[in-house]
Length: 294
Image 1 (cartoon, helix red, strand yellow):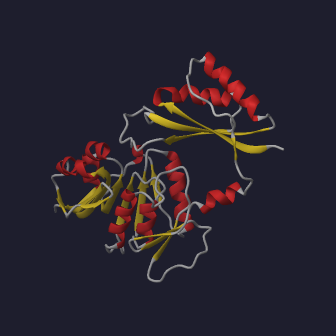
Image 2: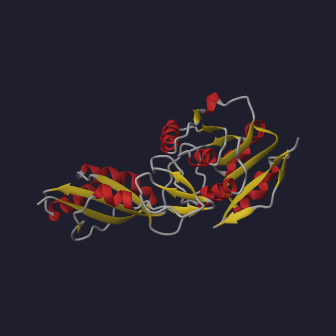
Image 3: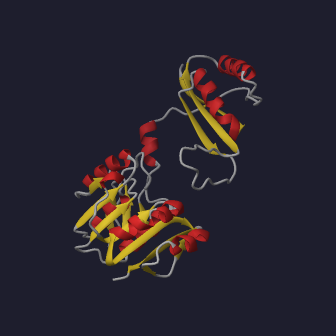
């Protein structure tokens, strides 16, 4: 009987790319890379695809061959490629289950600030006095689980956005722009370098009966916004300081996240026109917010 089976091996970072190719050559259905230690990778150079120094490589197989045949093929490939990795004696059978349902069940509602962030299919009771934010996980960043996203949602939920124009710069899934719309913003614009992010933003806006204007960087508007939220990374925040400053109207609010605590001073220094509030930190990440001088 055919069933899903998993092979797990440990590999050095410089072995991973070739190892993936060999696993697919052996008819693996999927390969997943997992950090085997606690080695975060922050802001890799553009165009690079770094992996962890010690990486757990998980390969999923689904065919009728016995474990011994799959492992024998892999041993031959590894030997020819001069990869010295010890293979287990057998693969690990995975229980038969509804994989779609199992995947969906990973995403549960979460309270963040004044929001109840939930996937659209979840029907759990909604706690009172919270703003519902429907958000389906997809290929773009922003499910509400990361501290930087939470910091921005907490800021949005404690500020009056009624009738405000909002720019979600680096919108990802659109979670921040959609949240602003749910709080009464009169116009929301999401901008991202990734077309997939704009598709995700449109989808999540529709789930909340909202319309969010979505733009690529070459469509950056010349108008200004009452509120600009940018949850990206420290280096882009510094490099794009003129752009973000110009998008914020005089007297408007600028909210930035995606920077580590130790990067806050450097990012702040790039924005001399912003009168900053007190920094807010969560799990090593900092949120900067402030008002642009009039």
